[in-house]
Length: 106
Image (tube, rainbow, N blue to C red):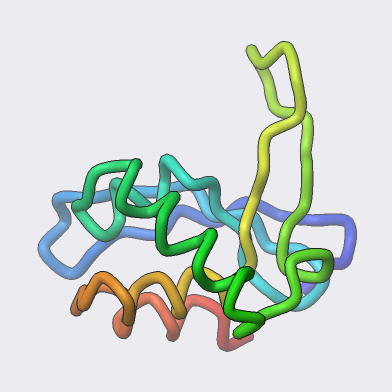
């Protein structure tokens, strides 16, 4: 994996959901909106679980969040690491959360 970053297309087993996943610093990164799509939950539910992951100190926010500039955006967008994605997946009891773990194994 290149440290400068790459983009990989992740597709669920049923083919219904496709997400552009960023690969950087030996992990994958997706946005909150992408997590909502992946786990098929409302964005507010994802926000609540992300906040709880950091408030409960399950993960360190500084090392698991990156603010990146993306096309067609006026401001940086928060991207969350694979560890956050998995933690949120377990919290929302999503089977897709456990499936997604294999994306980060490179």
